[in-house]
Image (cartoon, rainbow, N blue to C red):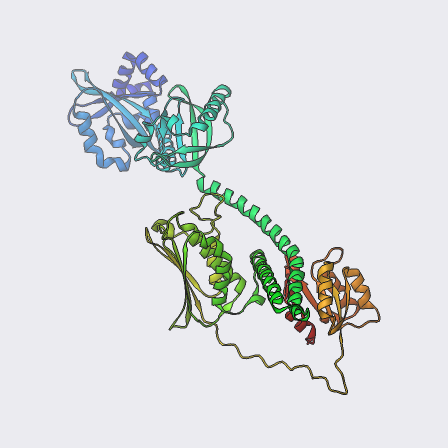
Length: 640
């Protein structure tokens, strides 16, 4: 073997070089650097020496390397650069370095960093090269580049603060805080970014993280943008080392909309609870209101029988008419509360006179409008539409209230205009206009979105127009908003006209009593836990009917099971101990058929069970408060 090496001049030269530079080559190898020497003498560069580490790095056996040009080992994709690399090496400009990729004998592609310097080799030109496998470094750099790209493209703001200044920030941070560039953000004193009342807390948290070396749970901060506006950010921070000094790495997320929505949802929950409370109050108010209205009607009916002077009767009538008007207004307000606190269903659908609906909404909002603006109405005669009057009244109440709130306080020319008209295309149009400041274009596209509002928290949920949009759409209609800054806004609602429904067959009137068969007095059982109302109903019906009264549903159940037969059972829906619903079910079980004679008196179904019951049971009902004429007509009507 030694003889063969002695016969090969390249190997002999290689051994000579290694023998003369052994310590230097050993040090390079220990550092992971391969050493090789290339003769630059014509006709072509050729390798005359390569160290063991160089063989390992290049990945070819020594005998396959010596005597060949180094460019023979370039990877295929690098071979088009061969001439450029050769020219670069031959430039003889002193020590230089470059990176390239070689292909090892096993086909593996390896990135190498090659440094070289010119030398004199036995009087001829040569170069000494140092090769290092930079696979790990490249992978690390690639990973670092990918990580940097992730940070640059991250949807959250990322920043580093060394306690005195911002050392790093990604583009998202600049955008979130409305800076023109990252550089502009980095030039900002971080103390000017966090709200003054938040700075003490942030300093304390920073010191705690520096002390413990541990991160703390996320915290919300009011953060100032470059234009002076504020954004609520959720910040997660952790201690790190940055360029040799302790620093804080932070991740910040804009949670302004989320916080606003949470506040509005909390407000919505409070209002939902308030709605339930108001529904209960409305139910309780309907009982005394019912007997108050009935009592006023009875008093008016008996005025002529008093025998008092006409002037005195007129004064009493005027006083009673005023009381009746006031009680009626209270009933209208309670009706609004009831309509707002219960969902509509298909049973509520029917022909609706929009003029009457608008007039009702205007009555309810009269006081609010009267103190803020001049009201102009143009309510034409229009055909009916198909829908739910209560839900439509909710729509127009909302539009009217919004119009009032859009007007600035104290301006003398404030005006709200309400127009109702029909179109030749068979549609009904309602327009609610105000001459307020108008709606900006960027806001107009979002006004029907749920929870979107420009009002401060507590003054609006951002649900009103969204609910209106849903109600109108369910009625087959459309709602649009036209607005011009400084000129006001117009909300336009368009409905299709209701198709003509076939006329209901005339109801046969009860046979008139004959002389031989006098009219039979109807027997009525009144079951209501409000004694005053039950007594008032008996007083009204006593002349035409035989009336029994009980204020307890269980006692009513016993009376219905007794020997007496009742033609009509006037039963309150909501009662303690036993509800009208439970009584109805028990009668249906014990005496099938008798339950059809029930007429339910209700001041509002404010529980889900009551709402479902009334939707399923088709018995007649009296909505409290009711008038004397309605009560008498209901009792006189035969069951189908």
